[in-house]
Length: 236
Image (cartoon, rainbow, N blue to C red):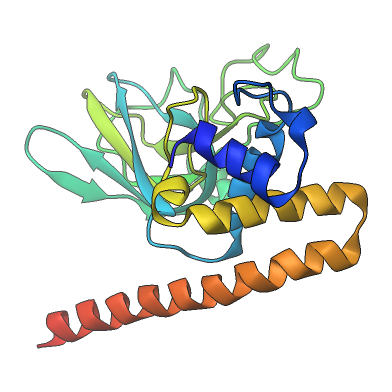
């Protein structure tokens, strides 16, 4: 199902909120609930399409990347024309102690380590008065997550960040997502759940949540079954 069909199912068939859609079914406020419902499902459990890779092409002397809609970071890889290497995760404090010189005074090389970036700062106007250090990427940007990788690369690379990412939003009526195609009933239930919460209707919200959790347990069992099968194949 696409975004238009999900919206109509929610407003016309489930909750009777015809004011949230226009007469042609286009959005008149419904999408904020479908978006919130989809994000709720994304966070509910580790579903099969919750993990993804984000690829960033970086130039020589680069040492950071940022990306949107990220939830968790599991692994980081550096890819060049000859192969791929896995970077070792370190704490931000460890990187700052190991790479104490300014960015301009640090030799480039093959990236070995990564740490989550510090994307938020307070009073950053003087941050580069004594030279730029490996500290953060942007002063404050709530839309993005990011990493710092060191040493700075001595060649153009593709940095692959593997982790959990939120499902894309519905933008156009024809847009489809994994949830709308594979489990549209869960998406409309989750949207109705969010709507009931906005009403402060605890009983109504709990009724939707019970249905969602029942299906979520079944999906979780499918995911575990696939992981067990993969493990047995590797061990065999």
